[in-house]
Image 1 (cartoon, rainbow, N blue to C red):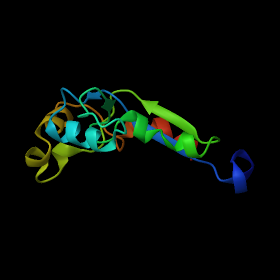
Image 2 (image 1 turned 45 degrees about the vertical axis):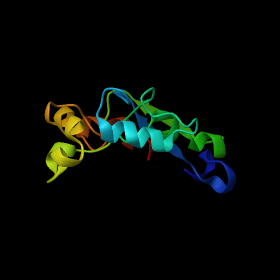
Image 3 (image 1 turned 90 degrees about the horizontal axis):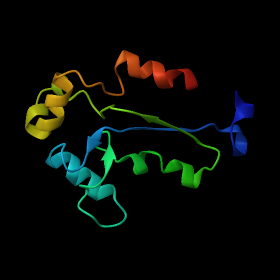
Image 4 (image 1 turned 135 degrees about the vertical axis):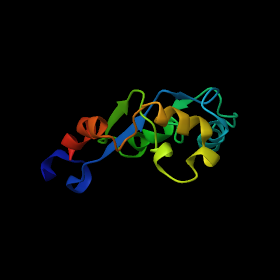
Length: 117
């Protein structure tokens, strides 16, 4: 519905996952978080989806005050164990996915954000 948005009727939703700590989810996670962190730290003190720290995922709110945000607990960025090379690129995240931790594209997770569309 166009009348629900901000300027020009544009609606926005920023979605981010948590549950993957920078200090315990592997080197890819820590390095990715460090890249996104404005304070210049090594990324170990952040939480997110394994690739994007939560504060970066929801940062749209700073630039679009009318944007809505949705934080999903224990949701990973990608289905690492479903792709060739996942184990080589992100062994810790691949293990988590293989053990059943959900990612944004899992049916149960989609149900949490798709209704917004």
